[in-house]
Amino acid sequence: MLSRYAAVAIYFLAITPLVLSGCAMSEEIKRIDENKHSLSEKAASLSTDLNGEQLYFRSCNTCHPTGRQGPMGPSLEHVNEHFLTDAALRDFIRKGKGVMPAQTKDVMDDKEMDSLIAYVRHLND
Image 1 (tube, helix red, strand yellow):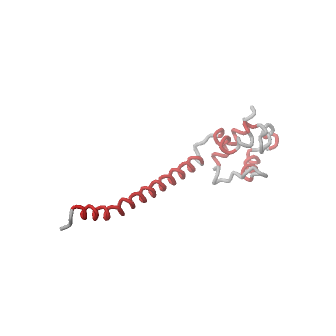
Image 2 (tube, rainbow, N blue to C red):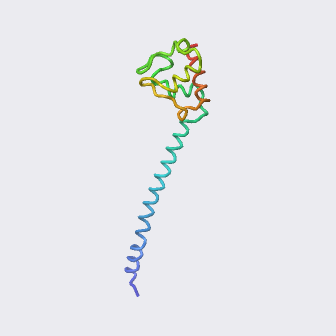
Image 3 (spheres, helix red, strand yellow):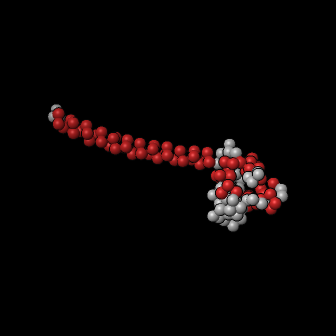
């Protein structure tokens, strides 16, 4: 018969790989959960539940702070004079210009674009 010491040694030799693989498995689960959380946050940032003001602050305010001239973009004070129709403003925003990024439909859908345009049109009221 094995001595008590030998039995304990065999037990630890058998259990060590299981414990170590459990640690690796928990790290993998943690990584998967972090990835899911990151994807969830990205989806929420592109949500169609945003109103015009929220969309403006997400996409425009950095360069046009509250409609004024900013570090990268001009003032939006005369936007209604430069873009007489919503269609003209929509086309401009969709295409972008210079450093202004295009706001394609995969970034901002038509419902969101309508909300953004309504907000921008009344920004300086």
